[in-house]
Length: 104
Image 1 (cartoon, rainbow, N blue to C red):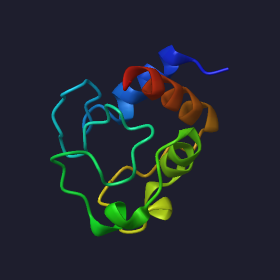
Image 2 (cartoon, one colour):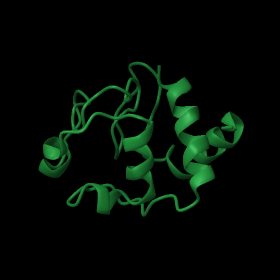
Image 3 (tube, rainbow, N blue to C red):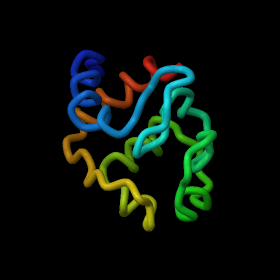
């Protein structure tokens, strides 16, 4: 079972410096993540994506987000996301559960 508190801690530790999650939040180095689940890659309004992100053509779900967060550059070759990935499956599970709640 996912631990939302740990997911929040993981977000603050590894995501918050580049991403916001609030409705109407600003894009930073990375796009605002509000409403990310159910949206296609490369579609956050006002964010300048690489062609790799725009052309990936997947919809963000728990499964696609899990695969991406494990190794972003492998999942979307050519992404400009500098983050190397979350290797621990439990941290990915917790982060995704947190994001699913926090980005509604």
